[in-house]
Length: 542
Image (cartoon, rainbow, N blue to C red):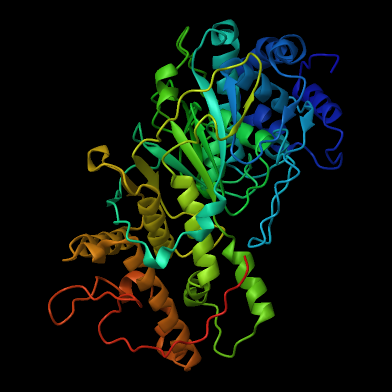
């Protein structure tokens, strides 16, 4: 990089030269459109006259003294602790598509035998190229966020060196989680609160769940993870630090700043401006049907390191299984005459023991409340050396929603039950005064929210403590799946037996003749259900 671009055409030339692995035939569509239609002439002039020279100077002259010569991809149970200056330098290099010397991860980190996606020791994404080449409308919100982040951070470069807060990334791996006896667990089911207003991350002090891809990284679309990383640029460093996750992996991040404000999901993502503004309407775009010039920037508060906004922010990243791909492979592997294309097929697939156990373990690791002790993990410190904090408990309240139920086609009700069980198992033993709770956001599904709330109330109102346990709910799920599978094999699909969702079939824990909830080795069944005679179930390797 030997010159500073003065136009978007020069910037495209620079980015291509910095990233020789990029396909030269693939245009940087979003980047060119962003500067042409989403920035005013004054904003573009500010970027090329002031901001971009600052970014180039940081990358070439200041970053080498702050960043290590090489960076290792995170191995299991390791921590990377970044100063705010180091995070800025890494993001600048990613923005300019500059390569970074990376050491491979732990070569002894095996590909798990029960997840055919396996793991890798390579980082997921070194640059923001996926945004530059996109045609998805959500991309422009993420580019706005990046520019706003640099507008805030670059003038504070010297002040960031004095900040005591760090951004901590921890890759948590628990090989023993696969041995949890879910069916026999006596851990009590902790409070599950259904919150129909707001969104994940709205309430300070709650852990945010990232509905992650196994390959965590920036993306140009409008999925929950893409919006989360796109509006929090420091979280985009996950793609640089973390390899593809295995089935017993999760990543917890503490101290990342939320920069962008947005509304909507998918192709409807709209940018509301940076976190230091209170704009309620999306930023106008001169290319939109409504026309009008782009809104002028609001300057960030002078000298504001936004320490308070960072200190209590926790994000746990956990990837669900891609049941869209699994279902297609399953249909090809084992055709069945009673198969159909309805939701019941996907629901049955997700209730198979192997898949159910994998999702429970994944969520359990993601919800684990206690960070590893300093003597347990290997700490990857980036100069200057940062002392590790003592053992820290995550906040007691976790905010989640329909994890893995978008592009991955997870069943929303089954996934809610899985997260409830995993959270309760992971937080078992916490004192009631800590008030652990799982907050569930149904994302605009009022009927589902009402059904979930009724079911939770019926479970929490059960007469005996053993009826309000993880094991009791697990057995109910397994019995529900067995009965549905048996109904399909008996040719009753025409009656819609296997398409009835869980919360409709099990609106409450059914009472026995004595007025108590029926439990047992096989779990509870709704009234009138028949015992299916132990149908054979195939446990499929994930």
